[in-house]
Amino acid sequence: MIKLSYREIAAILRQEIMDGLYPHGSLLPPEPVLAERFGTARSAINNTFRVLRGEGLISTQQGRGTYVTAMTSPIVRNASLRYQAHAREQGHGAFDYEVRQLGMTPKSDLTISRVLPPEQVAEILGVSPGGEVLARSRQMYADNVPVQIATSYIPLDIAADTVLEEAEQGAGGMVSRMADLGFQQTRMTERITVRPPSEAEAEFLSMSSEQRVYVIHHVGWTSSNRPVEVCVHVMPTHYWQLDYSWEVDPTSS
View 1 (tube, one colour):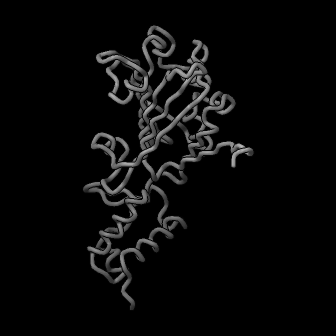
View 2 (cartoon, helix red, strand yellow):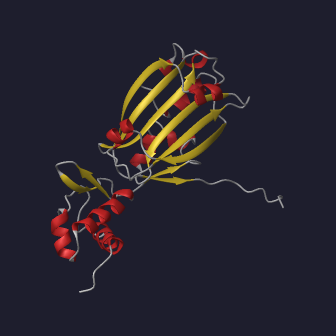
View 3 (cartoon, one colour):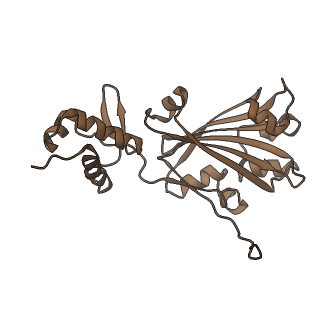
């Protein structure tokens, strides 16, 4: 019998997960059982699990074993589509629309407060040192699976004592309500970085140290070129697919 490498074992288990032999949410056999199956040492299976955890296919819970992750398909975040009115207003904002496209049920736990913004956010919004902003912080789920942490920061001269300080935003979500208040966003910019999750993020998102998160700094701008919202999205890379598209100027050389 040819001894398989841990990467080859990972490829076999990956395919078995994709084929449904190990359904999403199910418990994988323990390391000793898999080591016997593949005729290898437990250390090789440990390395196999490390690879599959890094891909987001499995999650190891201390004292309980290793499970196939609950998500069956990545959530598609289409940056061009998600802020179009017809998409947002089918539900309560862009996230609601994205999750429902998979036939899943979105849910968010929302905290609204006036806070001192992170330094980078304050700089973008032009908030003076010590100045507060409105923060709408959401812990977000798809079918009870935690999939994102997102915090929107809005200047108080826009948000104070308005509907933006209320939990329910109605059809179209916060972007539509800002437009109702006279601060329609006509341009948006995003910067994406990838890093390990913080301890708090890993705990909420059920992530391991091998996994990574996208961090998207999203800025909404008005036609007068004023930044009126900064949203910081923290998203497990294995749960999300980021799609972007843009027009090409045919006259450019």
